[in-house]
Length: 328
Ligand code: G3H
Ligand code: 13P
Ligand code: NA
Ligand code: ZN
Image 1 (cartoon, rainbow, N blue to C red):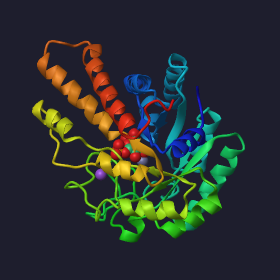
Image 2 (image 1 turned 120 degrees about the horizontal axis):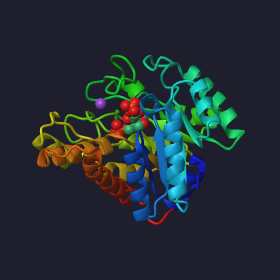
Image 3 (image 1 turned 90 degrees about the vertical axis):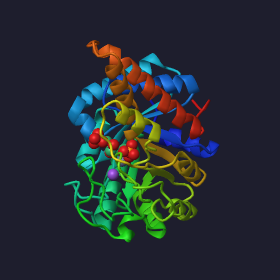
């Protein structure tokens, strides 16, 4: 059944678990997530980014998620729009049937310039007003995603702040978060704690100076009833990088967000954990391996099947680690 984000996150808070929110772009990813949810009895959040809408088109994404709901009627599913850059983009998604939207007002509508606090409050509030009048949930963002190692805004996948940031900008302020939530009435708040999108997050296994899990605790202490969201939360498994390299891929040394750090976040109010890159890595590793070992195969189903299975495995693993088992 299609449900709102608020419903799922309230349940997660009551029961002390976190929900992975997986980005989807195609059929195999949707099927992989649902297979993992079915196997573990987990609720599901599927989200479509601007890049996904550009790649597949919103109708295809919407109908793929609808098909997932029809195929697994016993699993609650949130259809969420990831990183809406303007209120207009959010309104369109709401009108087309999404049950949750992210209004990302941390950046201006160009997706590159850091927005003023007042701008962020105004656009987030505007979307909340419209969304709440029809039972749709809203995630807002305070703070700018980027690296505390390089002090650079998040640029890897083409959306994110341009240029050098200050530590202040890259870490959400706890008292500002309290004011922000009071003024916007958002259902969930994405925070900046040193993570960034994509595969290249950290040059070493992160420690507290570059991945600020303690900041989550400060924020949660101020706004205990607000569901916190971690973006850029792929763990970038070293074993997937190794397979990609073994079968012809070229990926530099890199580290993601350790699952244990996410679990620590979940103990302090993190309820939604955004994951895209790990599914990409799993599918690419399986595809490269399959095609290398079976050079005469040319039917896409032959390599998409192991790719889909690899995606299912990683989704299952995150659902189990975040405590979702049996919560559907
Ligand atoms: O927001 C970040 C997600 O990883 C989506 O990436 O814009 O390449 O679809 P994308
Ligand atoms: P990753 O790139 O770490 O998977 O993060 C995805 C994300 O935050 C989508 O909004
Ligand atoms: Na990055
Ligand atoms: Zn994100």
